[in-house]
Every structure is written in structure tokens, then in C-alpha cells.
Image (tube, rainbow, N blue to C red; front, side, top):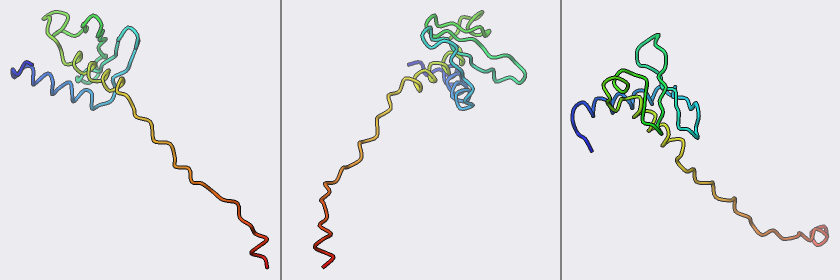
Length: 104
């Protein structure tokens, strides 16, 4: 795993983006996500995890693994986590009451 300051910075920013909760799945089968920009009044980025592409500068021009890709990868992991089912409620054995014996 890369431990350079640039990696840590992008990872930290990806966590911030994920925390906002605005990452949307466009096509789950094709692994395409809409990831918001951290800049105000900026359109969201389109991230294709299958092709490892994003339309931001870092990925499209500089060919860097950008924060948007990292955030989409984390969101995909969240969506694919298996949820354990709640255990079935306990069933207790019940007995018939002989109310005729109590009425005497």
C-alpha cells in the first residue's frame, strides 16, 4: 500500500466525500457512480469503476487515481457488504389450560 502524503491526502478527501452521503449509483452492473465535487456549484463527476476512470482533471489528464475513484470504491464496498439476518424469534412450548378445573 502506498503511504505517500499524496495518497493519504486523497484517501482523506475520499473519506470526506463518502461522509457527505451524496454518492449515487448510476449503473450498478456497469459499476458507474456519480460522485459529488467538493467545490461548491460544481457538477458531480462520473466514475466508472470497471474502467477505473473519472472525468476529473487528476484522472482524465494527469492519469492519477483520484479521490473520486477512491470514494466510489468505498461506496461500492458499503453496498456489497453482507447483512446478517436477525435470528429467528424464540418459540416457547405452550400448554392447554384446563380452565374447568380452576372454576370449581
